[in-house]
Image 1 (cartoon, rainbow, N blue to C red):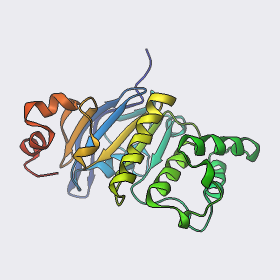
Image 2 (cartoon, rainbow, N blue to C red; image 1 turned 135 degrees about the vertical axis):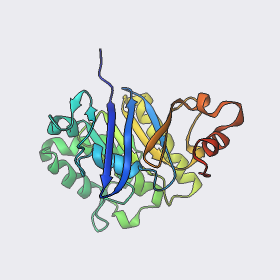
Image 3 (spheres, rainbow, N blue to C red; image 1 turned 90 degrees about the vertical axis):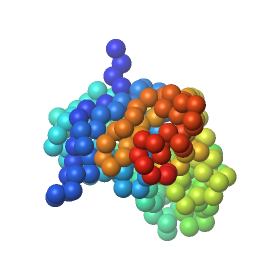
Length: 241
C-alpha cells in the first residue's frame, strides 16, 4: 500500500509553560488536498515548523511519504516543498536567479536546474516573467513564484502556510486554483493552512485546529452539515473565523 503523503500521530509541542500543540494527529493522502483551518494562534505555523524541522518534535511521529522525520530526516524533507507565510524570495534577484540558487541548495547542478526552472515556471504560469525581478511582480505573481521555488526539487507534498495572506480577491483565487491544479494535473499533495472559509470547498478534506487541538477531521461538507461551515466552526471553537 502507498504511504500517505503526510502522517502525523500524537504530536504535542510546548514553548516553556505554553502548550502550542496537544496530541495532534492528521493524514494527508497521496494526491490529496487537505485544508488546515484555524484562527491566528491555533497552532498552524507551529505544526508547519515541526514538519519542516525548524522545531524538533519530541513527542509523537511525523512521516512524510512514509519516512519518519526523526529517523530519516533527509529522505523525509526531500519529498517536501514549502511556501511559508513570510516571503522567502530575494527581492533584488530575478525569479530565475532565485530558482537557480534554490536548486543549488538541493544539490541540483546547473545543467539540470535550467530545464527544471523552465518546467516549474510553466506550471505556475510565469514562463514569460522568468527574468523579471521579484520587486516587479504583483502579489499574486510573487506567491506563484514561491510555489515554483517549492517545486524545483520535485516534491510529493506541498505545505502552504497562509499562502494567500495580503493578496486581493482575484490573486487569492488564482493561487488557490493553481494549487488545486497541481494536485489534479501533476499528482502533488497539499496541506493548505488558512483562516479563510471561502478557500474551502465542500469536497475538501478538512482539519479544524483550535488552541493546538484537532477538533474535527473529515470531509468539509460533513463537518459543515446543514448549518454551513461558518456556523459549525463557531459552534466548535466559540470564535468567528
